[in-house]
Length: 75
Image (cartoon, rainbow, N blue to C red; front, side, top):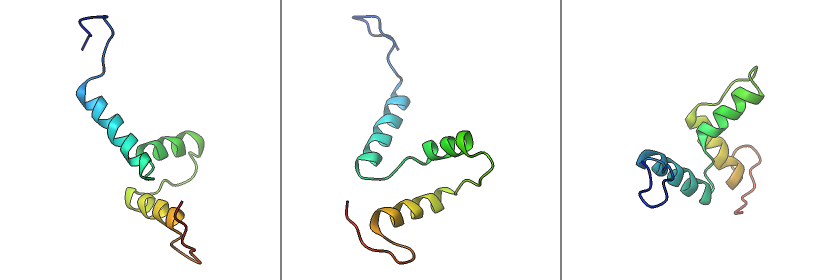
């Protein structure tokens, strides 16, 4: 889509929605799984990639102190 006033190419609705969703998740402390996967494949191709469920649990444990010897931490 192109802006009728200035001629700039604007992102489509799906792209805007994905961006807003990613931003909202980051605002509440939920990292983006797709970004994690891309990073692992680019930087650590020889190591396994966590599943989406494993990733979510790991991020929760790191944020709230779950898992072994977990100490609660809010921020």
